[in-house]
Length: 200
Image 1 (cartoon, one colour):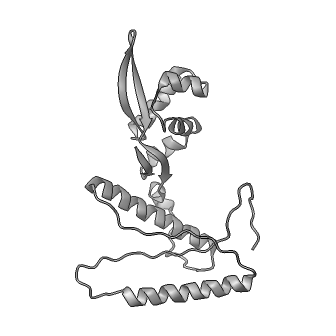
Image 2 (cartoon, helix red, strand yellow):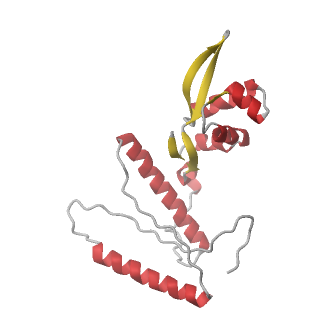
Image 3 (cartoon, one colour):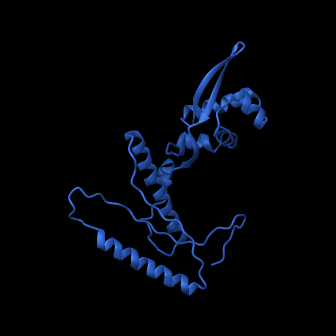
């Protein structure tokens, strides 16, 4: 089972978003049969089987084993990943494009950039898995508490200058066999659980 799987196919995305099927995916972090799942989520076994077949058709669950129980063959299934991310590639015609209106201070532009990051890294993960290779990535996730909006603006300016200096130092257009990498740095207010709006 993978830690995270990327859903790029629109039909698979649609299947995964059904509330019952999403619940089944969560339950199938550990292998279970339709009978076991029916008892857990309070649905008839036939209905659970119907949903499992849809999930299996799109590669979201897989067969772990088959075992005989009297006259019946019980299929034990498991989710193909512990969690799933739907790539913006699944909505390609309407996926956000950060190149349309680049604005470092726009939250919507940041969201478009994040969507592109999910799509690109998802594509890299999928390709690396097919080639049985690892993908070279790096990320930092941290928190900073600003005393004022002025401090936040000063931090953003210094951060931009530091990143620009690093990129200038290491970027080499003439490097034969070099590989281009994307650098994305984001700063946004932390989201507190149960809070819909955040102060500026």
